[in-house]
Length: 355
Image 1 (tube, rainbow, N blue to C red):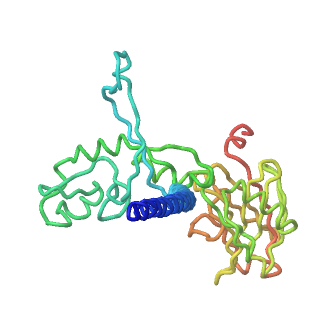
Image 2: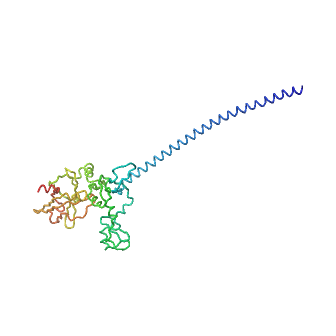
């Protein structure tokens, strides 16, 4: 009985001791799990923030790259003279369904990365029809073929008898922007007419004739510039009316501005060995100069020298050599080197109407 009574309490105590640690351990495990969950949630939130920040950074970087690319493309398109429109006829490919506009002409816009391939390799000028090729496929313009005595510049094979029809068709179908598009010209011209158009384009940039000024612009804008920035350094005149001037020894350039259409002219006075040479220039392309004529008179000691001619042309910063000028001998002048002149500038069609 003593043993039984001793073992009974002993088992109860043992059982009690086992339960208490289990309760304590379970309680600590729950706290640990809750703490672990909180830490995991915090790490997850921080990870999401980092991913969001990284994603936003990548988006900003992509936007900056796209903006830089767009700016580069815009600058390239502005300065490029090689954007070409190639026109062709063919069957239109529809994305789906039956249509009746399959035979309509289309035009596509392409960029020519090397425009020199459309220039003659000898004279470096735009190819003009006819284009010839040798047996090895080297091409040249007709003018250069004659100058080379019909021998290919690359392989000395005969050239000048075989037409390069493929290149000729390309030249006929290509339309290119004028090189002065940035100055306002919107013309689309064929490649073979490029030189002709640009020589006569009214948007050809001209230089300000006032000494020391570096302004350049088409002739119409140049007139506005001179009127606003150089007031008092030019002389106003009107077509078909005489203007009386005295050209002194140091007065080599006289700038004239017409009062109705603001066209600009220059009287160039040069002192040569034999006397004074007087020339009249129109500021603008060559084609515009051919529209104007002038009457120039120099009177002295009861005598008169006269010149009736078309005006010359200049872009404002140079004066091309010309044979259209009036030479006033030294002995002709009463008060050398001053020259008294009378000049009348008029348009050709106005002259025809007047006569």
